[in-house]
Length: 276
Length: 274
Image 1 (cartoon, rainbow over the protein chains, first blue to last red):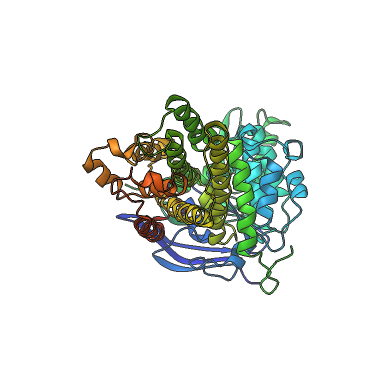
Image 2: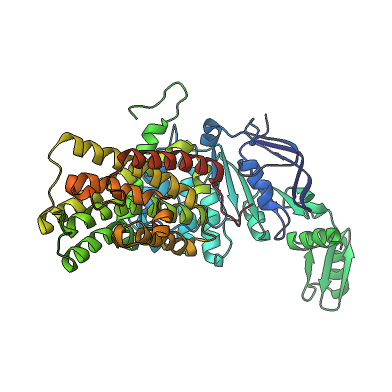
């Protein structure tokens, strides 16, 4: 199957600062792909180039088979964009603005159904300035999906959310089955909760890519067995536990077996690459 | 979905532009501040000036109310075009509305079409209200011949076109949404003072008249005076004539200049977003 997004050697400079140094990406149709990285790593620059909002200095880019350097209306109709922190506050209602945006597209979805899907049915007749931050972002998602896109861009969608609002937002994204989603985030839990695959970007380079469960050799890394009187790193944790059980003659007090969390892996990746 | 371009499956720019005009008008009339500052101010000023100055200009039979009506129609057309667009587009750019629109399949021309159509509707409403107030309260006599209405039409359309294009261009000047109202409104108020809207032209120093003559408002007001003051008022003009040919020339030049400025300066992203 053709990739939904294919990027090779993407490079972008702002004056003397090199923001992207040869980024490669391959996103398959239907998957949720997360670009994870600290602030200023190049996440938004990458996404904006793919969205057709920003030009590049080098590299080849194909998004749904089109070079986003020359966006056409037809291509725009196949993509949806939820940009970072939109704070426009027009005096229109949720239903009015979703209906209006639907008129831009050749085959829009039913606006009321979209409003329902993003969980704003109870706020359909509320004006935008009356919405909370979380509701505002849901409206942004509604505007991003009302055209029934094949590919949805979500740029740091839950920045500033409280944990509960973030969880509810994740449920909304999980419900977008069949749509390819490119998500950027600096929240590890978010990448882990939503993404089929993750790419970690640091200083304009992809430093690791893969399933969040196995990222950076996480699954095969040595396990740590810890108990009340000690702690060992081992490749054979089961044997260690059996040995301990024999030693204690049954239950081992405060026994835990852990492998590096995504956070451990991520922090290690960032540290390794953060030279002077 | 009546006029959909079925070959490409995309709605036409005309269709979307008309939809945007309705959407813009709905937003505009719900924004109380904007309605008061750009739409109601000329009407309030007409009532004020009409109540304070109730006389005639010596030897011409021209009433003060007539002069102010003509001037405030000019100022009113510029306030719903230049001032309104200058401020609202600056705010839309800063808040990411333009960037959001640029990311949809909306044709970019539909955005400008929507702005221009909505400004036309606002101008017609504004001018109708001003004329109604002037006729009812101050006994303004409307033109009774076709020539008068024709002049009224072309001065209004040229003024509206120049004002809209300059407003779109001026929207790139403010550095932030917060400063937009100040940056656009202050020069506009100065322009009104030197263009004979508040203070009759005859009382301004020559060099100020020279400065004002560069800008469109002076000529719009002069054109509207030709419509509402009649032959008797021509003697009050600086040159003793309404100079309609120069009115057309200067306003036409501003339309072309405004268009060039728009094409050179319009940005869909904010300054912070490079």
